[in-house]
Image (cartoon, rainbow, N blue to C red; front, side, top):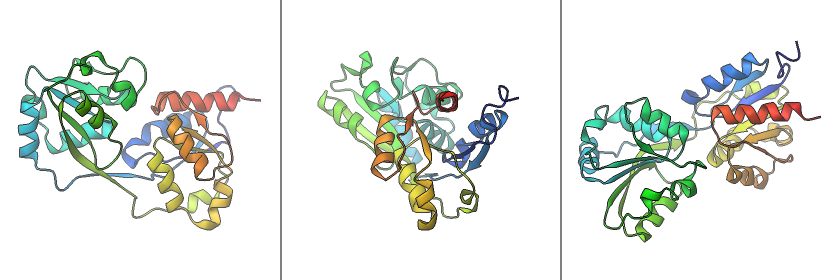
Length: 256
């Protein structure tokens, strides 16, 4: 039975946004885990976005960069007909596989994405982004965040605009009661989620929670986890995808 349920009696906190945590919770449950869905970030539309202006910008650009699957979901929620505004000469870029898959699901094909890596640094190595002088490039992203893609493309001579299609916020109503139980693992797929996790949990709980093992989706998140006081060295998954986070958990459970 231990072979078929390798995560039996293991309690795992999943901190993804509510609309993104179901699949991995389901997979973990099938392996015997006790999962606690504890969304630490909420994705909301940016109320200041003008859909008509976005359509106009998309129609004129030569490069359209989606920074995350949330960027794809929120854009198509606001403008379901976005595809018909993309001109034939426009190249579509995705930061990683999850973002590319989200575009594929909406019938956007021939997407440029990194062969290795899943972050801004990897995206900027794509050959088509090396020669962008005078090209109009749009970056579809959330409010705030890193500006590496914007700054690098500007330095390469492109005309770059950010479209901040969504905003991230701390969930307003969160039940911390499930965290009073024994916790073995906490999953983090963004640095902001780590910050929010500690903001949402009570001081009385944090002494025990900071002793938990963490699994993170990027070295930058590992740095954040350590800086905020988690005691154990984080386990770093290859990417923050469900598949790679699950693989990292399986590696951890096999350790002596």
